Structure formats: structure tokens, C-alpha cells
Image (tube, rainbow, N blue to C red; front, side, top):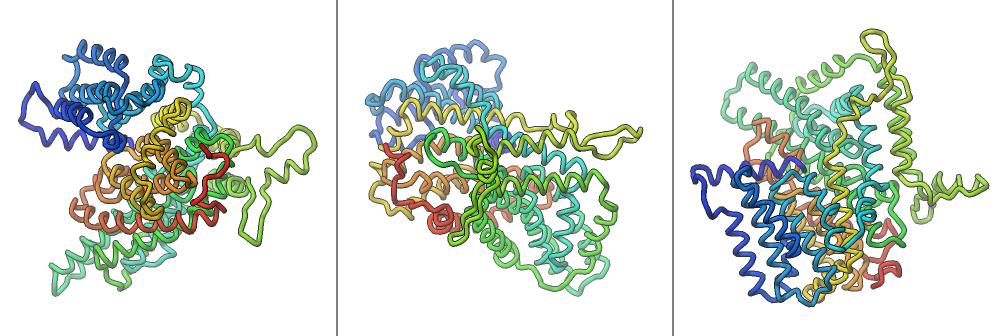
Amino acid sequence: MLFKLGAVDEIQQSASEGAGRRLVGPGYIIGVCGFAGVLAAPWWVAVAALSWLGAGAGAGALLLALLLAGRKRLGERARNALVAALVLAITAALAPALTAMPGEARRTLAVAVLMAAWWVSSAIPIPATSLLPLLLLPALGVMSAGKTAANYANNVVFLFMGGFVLALAIQRWGLHRRIALHIVLRVGTNPRRMVFGFMLATAALSMWISNTATALMMLPIALAVAGSLRDVAGARGSGRPGQENVQMSDFTTALLLAVAYGASIGGLGTPIGTPPNLSFLRIFQILYPDAPGLSFGQWLLAMGPLVLVLLPLAWWVLVGLAFRLPRARVAAGGDIIAGELRALGPMGAAERRTAMLFAAAAVLWVTRGDLDFGALRIPGWAGLLEDWLAGPFSAAYLHDATVAIGVAVASFLIPGEPDEHGRARALMDWDTAKGLPWGILLLFGGGFALAAAFHEAGLSRYLGESFAAVVGGVPPLLLVLATVVLLTLLTELTSNTATTEVMLPVLAGGASALGAHPFLLMLPATLAASCAFMLPIATPPNAIVFGSGAIAMRDMVRAGLWLNLLSAVVIALGVYFVSAAVLGVDLAQVPAWAAP
């Protein structure tokens, strides 16, 4: 999601092209409107506008002074965005509607909206904005520097880091490409089955590998298949060439969207599949330190059914609703995939060892904790070790991050293929590991620090009670659906990770104030953040396939709108009835560890 905000800037730049340098830009207009709106609005309007919460007056004045000192060096759009955020910050800090809020909570609120506004506008790079808690939270007396910094290095951050090292090893030796080609070849070669094959292969990889990397890997294969089929259709000729061209265009669009949508949907299935999932795990841990955590296996069992429903649903939207594809078999498609597989050659030693390491990681992740299937309960290996080993060892000391880092270290020890000079190489080297998305790690840290400040200052409880006062009479299932729709719409235009990290503490407090389990709003919001399918800037996979130039905007919007609506219903119903049952929680009750 780090790509989308640059795209937003390009759209805004195009809209203002030719306007020249102006004294009053869009940022100033937003700021003035925010100032007037907050002063005039009742308290519940301010609460409803949580995504525009402001910074404290003192910090805002300091940052505004620094901004004005360097105004000649800033572009107009960046300057407008920075000033608008600071105006909103100061306005929120001084608004009469918020005077009842405790001082620490008010200052935390200030930091939250300053960060949210800069994340949304990309006024400065997202990772740079994510460093603000290290400066502002200690300076404003909300949290000590040590407590704040601890949020940038915790078990969830290292789970992501270790998982990404494994993903880089898989990509280094080409294992991901071989897996994808085998899946596509075995699903079938008529247009509808090929679309499903690409979607299934992309989703399967995206559960374990970055959805961005998965989409980048699958896109050239999809384009090659579509191009070759177009050449075959042109050479064969047709009595109705116009109709044939339309069918090929629809097939190409559906195939590329299958890659984008498969990457987003597949990421829902595992904790490491997409960053919002990891954000949920850590923020939940911060807000409810006494709560039992969700293991890798529990997440897979609870969210896997939603993936299994969303994949065929997305496929049906593409081949039966948005683009009506024929059922006839296309022999050339299978030949192309088979040719790609032959070009890979037989599996080498490094590829086999990487596959074994990947399988070991998956098994260790899934089986670390107990797996409860109702009548059947399978004990996890961590608990068995605690029973078998005497001494101070405890299963509670282990985390999925332990497995991730263990596998990552092993990848630097296990030999791979020798290089062209015959020198030994491990499966992973540091030059490859430098490709880790360090910016996302900082984004995690900033969001976790903000969530910790929400908890420390009591802001989650305050906002949650205000939220509950507004929506208290809404039926729970309807509230879940509204939350999913809201998060989906927000993430069509903003970073899904940043949006999740800002909204989850508020939704957690709201659920507790309503007398419900925190999962009632937190889980569907987390999943919805990865289900924005309508716009190119919504997700990196969307941007990648749209950037190929083979998809029209209207086609992506048409298919994405249907899928947004259907996925909102699936997520709301799935979490409310299926995931809650799998996890054994009652969403209508506040557990003891979450009681106010």
C-alpha cells in the first residue's frame, strides 16, 4: 500500500495542472473548513471525524514554524498538505467540543490526526511520518521514549521480518514461479478455468509471500498467455472479428484482474499474508495484554473459510458478471504454460532445499498451538515440548516470530547452488536480504506506538464510549457490515496498514463500550482493509496490473464495485458466524480481560 499515495498525488497534480502557483491551495481550504466545522459542530461530529484528529497546539506551532522557515524548498502540494494537517491539529486541540477530554488523551489525539493526515496526503514519505511518535509522544508527556521505542521492535515486527526473508529465498531460487505454473496448468485451459487457475495460484502464493511480489511475478506470465492467445486468434481468423476482439479484450482484463484480486484475497488467510493482519495481532496484544493471543494455526482456521468463499466469488464476478467468458477449451494456453515450465528445467538442489524449508516453516507455524476442531483437539508442538522437557521451559515463551526468525537464520546456513565461479552459496545472502521492506517495518512501529499511546492515555476508552453513544441502538450485524463498508471505502484511497492502525484502537474501545467482544469490530475491519478492489490506487496489486496498460479504468471499477459489495457481505457474515465459532468466542459478550 506504500505505492498508492504517490498515485493520489499524481491525480491531484493532474487536477490542478495549469493553475500555477497559488496563495490559497487545496490544503489551506481543507484546513479552514476543518477549523470552522470543528468549532460549529456538536461533539459527536468531531468523534465521527476520527480520521482527521489534530495535533496538540504546542507541537503544531513548532512544526508550523519549521514548515514556514523552509517554505521555499517545499513543493506547493506538499506545503499545502503539511499546513492543512497542522491547522486541523491546532483546531482539534482548541475545539470546545473536546475540552472534557483528559490532557494526555487530548495530546495523543493530536498526534494521531497529525499522523493520519500526513499518511493520507503523503506530505512526507509514509515511513518518515511513522517516526513521529518517537519525537512527539515523549515531548508531549504521553509516553516515555523507552516505551515508545519498544514498539518498533516486537514479536510481530520480527514475524514479518522472518517471513519476508523466507519469501525472498523462495523468490531467489524461482520456487514461487514453479508452484504457480503447476497450479495453473492443472486447473485447465478454457478461458474460465485459466482465470481461476491464475487467481488460485496467486492467492496460494500471497498467503506466504508479499502480495506485491506475487503480483509482479504473475503479471508477466498472464500477459504472455493473453498475448499468445490473441496471436492464435488473429492467425485463425473469424467471421466476426469484432466480436473475437471483444472476447480477447475481456479475457485479458479478467486474467489480469484475477492476479490482482487473488493476491489481495489470499493475503487474508494467514497472519503474514498482508500487513493489516500483523497490525491487528500486535494492536490487540497492546490493548489487551491479558488476552489469549491468536496463533498462526488459529488464524488460518478462522480466516481460511472466508478465503475459500471469496476466491470463487471473485472468479464468478470476473467470468460471469463483469466479463462473460466462453467455456471452450484453448489448447494454446496449456502449451504456453507447459513451455514456461520446461524453460525452468528440473528442480535444482537449492530449489528443493528451499521447498523443504518453506514446508517446515508452514508446518511449524500451523501446529505450534493447539488446533481445536470441536470434537477433535490436536495438541500443538509447543505444549508437547513443555510437557516433555523438565525445567524452566514454557510454551508461553514461544511465538510465531520464533519460528520465523529460526527459519530465516537457517536460510543463511543451508547451502544452495554454487555461483558461476564454483564458490559455495547459502540459500540466502545479505545482499538479497537487503530487499526487506524496511519502510513497512517503520510503519508497523509507528502504528503500534500510536496504539500503545491510545491505551496508555485512555483515549481508546474515551473515544469508544463516545462511539457507543452514537451507535448504541444499531443491531450488531448491521454495525459490523457498516464497519466493513467504511474500511473498504477508506482503503480505496489510503494506505490500508495506516488506516488499520489508526482505526483499530477506536473500534476496540467502541466494541467494549457496547458490551461486545473486541473481535466484533476489530476483525472485520482488519479484513476489509485488504478488500479494496475498485481503484488502481487501492492496493499495490491493483496498481501493478493497471500499470500494464492492458486494463481500462472503467473495467476495473465495474468489476471492483461488484466485488467490494459482495466481499463486504461475506466478511461481515463470515466473521460474525464462522470465524467467531471457530475461535470459540461469543461476540455479544465482553470477556473479563477486556472489561472496562
